[in-house]
Length: 192
Image (tube, rainbow, N blue to C red; front, side):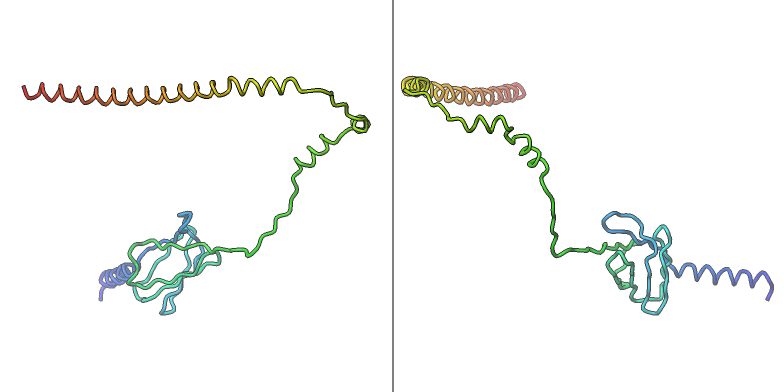
């Protein structure tokens, strides 16, 4: 064999070996970012690790492939399930059974300190409170106003609200009527 034939044969065998592999990428399912350092094992003991961009070469001679990474759920895929060049991994969920939160509301403590009575206030509180004797004129006046004018004012307010509601409904009906009249006029002109 000549050197040229040997080189051609080697190139053909090399391209056949390259075409027997498929380029794939491993991606985080939540962030859509490529995942590096994912350990990949096939059922016929072939192994690979993803590069910094999440890519790896997938050989054609396997029926099941496993993906493992410490921060992601382990996943296996059958060859018949591969539909695209992207494999999605789900992050591991670390749940806690119980969480206890300790804290204090500093605002309440500050307000209590601000509202704490001064020594002078404490002395004033010890003095007897003088309540004026006799009827409360303002309370009686408010009561009389409520009895005499309160019901009339309330009735006037209700009438005003009802009138506003009627006027609003009339405006809606008038608007619908105007639209109907305009469309009818356009329709009649088009038939003439």
